[in-house]
Image (cartoon, rainbow, N blue to C red):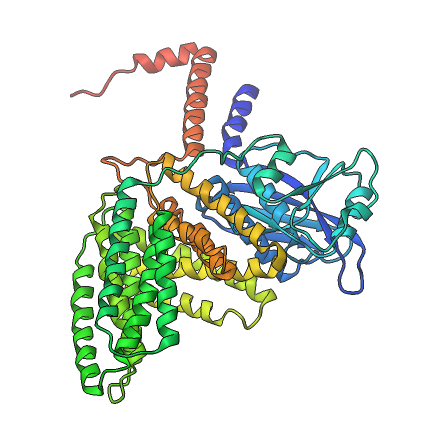
Length: 564
């Protein structure tokens, strides 16, 4: 009987089994308390539906709660895990002051990665740093006090942000057994915590030949267009003309470097300037005729695009690119007063429509087939808008009033959701999330360090692209924005940061869409373990029963069967 009870207990163990671990946080008091301290954070992960629970004593500030959710998301992205299959229970315990601020982000991310991947973290190692998009670790306030608190607690390895420019580390006194280590990203921090090497960015990107040829074709179409407009121009505006010619020169530089997305972008900008110059010499009657033609062309092409069947990731990304340009063109058309037509608004609408037509050529490329039914797109749309809202809420704690345009984009994404335009919803929500990340990066990065941080983001993007390459996926948007960001860094770091964040966010859309297979059977590993464990225990109980009651078992066998 005792054996049976033991077996039943063993049978129930997998049901209640959960993964757990903890890590130490370095803290600092409020405005009037600059002394460093420590807190402990515990994490328990159970099978669930993606819920995140936070229990803290003393109470944490709101920013810590939001940064915990952010850190959780970064950890899941880093491991490429679908964390909607788990529930996360974070417990924070501190002896004194309230835990607050984003500086716990790096530690919480590492703890989450450790528990999710069964990674053993060094007990004598501690970290402080914000966590940013791309897995970059950013500077924190009160670093010297936090380091001293870590030394007092006996930690032998103290990990700090590499790009922390407001402190002289040589002024901090440490004993021989204590080491301060500067890291720039999660890969480096995880190595110092576990000894496991995560970074492998030595490989070179193999750009898809089909993409390169098609992007070159589109760039040439856009560049030929500005030459045609330029020849037909009669108006003269020397400053605007010079501005347009500068874009043409940049497009030639990009062409020589085989950066065809950048070339296309510069040629579009040149065409826009030339078209604006052309329309300055048009009468209102002529502009009205062009306006009406543009509306008809816009409606006709939009209807055509809506009829296209989307069956691959390439189709989805192309649809997003084209529809964004069509929506942009329509917004400009809607802003035009027909009684007094603005030549600049009309010029933009005309050229934006043409660029949408040019980009539609990417529909010609074949891509990996993925699950793209409306229900799946709806769910991805909701997930991306939720991610964007969380990031915006976090950024708004530190930059109140700076995110109105970003919040407007999320509202537009919800409008798209209500109109069942799920692909556009996904695109807008992704860009809104990226734009919140742009502000957070700018907030936590000293201007002198921005180029260095951008280079680190490029490395993070490259890693994503290499991962996609291994899966035979070419992220059209991710690579295009990556290329353009690298082109811009020399003379416009703000724009470079913008496109780098777009690349980070849109470079791994495949995570949200499973490959299309003839038969798709989704096994949950934990459930499978439970099933087989139960099967073994059940069989053991039957055998045990037979051994302990051989006579009774024989009686059951000898019972007469039902007459047929």
